[in-house]
Image 1 (cartoon, rainbow, N blue to C red):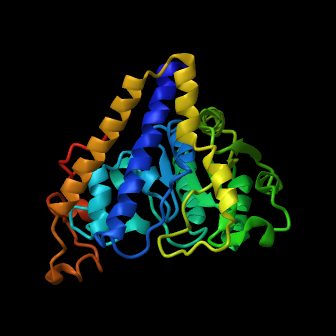
Image 2: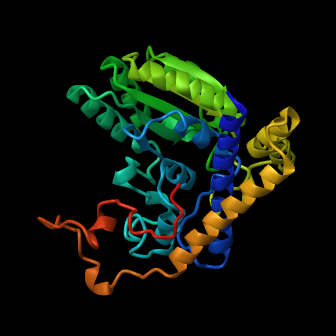
Length: 342
């Protein structure tokens, strides 16, 4: 990979890190309510995989999906307005942190049900295959999903029907507070997936260059008709499962060891050593990310809560409705004029 391409991956990871840090700040200030699961430490996974996808492809994610949505093209303003519960959000404020959705960028959630996105991804891939569309559906999920029946059903059908889907298991070693070894007799998840007769590779999820290279090879193979592929991305979340989590199940020394492999620091150090990133370049990347997130916060702060009179809207579809205020309901983030869309 060229220096400029690697710098772009660093920029994308930094955008996610700054968004998540701001979410923690806003949650602590009670600006964001409900559940909040941040992606700090796992940025290399989303940045590496999403860079390998095209705009025609689909993305299905979990409840830890802010970074995926941002890198897919949903603006920081639309994401933050959604978390504020405002109508300018990507789902009119009705979904919140765990249910981001944007049809315009083919970002299909945001799903609060563990393993709930897997059957959706299989359905999207099946529709593409039946229609003869050369698309790939990337499905992100945690290793905790492996214990669910939907995981096995989805693996089986995807392999049986040779569907164009890329399964991306974000293995951060803990399903909420349960260590992987306490829930799975076989902790090699790539090996488990290979049992369904699909290509399955384990990847260092803290190395964004390794993630991008492996994801690109997998996406190319899937698009060429090679059937489903599976990536086990071995990563680690630096913060607790959610903002409600007292985190009594992990040793602090373990967290500190993983933080030494911060994907942003690793790539920044490598680029600086090769001469592809100067101190001025790094300062500019940070300034750009800070400005983008600040604009997103300003957009969210200026937003409007949904009127009580509208709370029963969209229980049934509104025939013939299009444009105007309906854009948010259909998943469009076009209402965001903060300029934060990449």
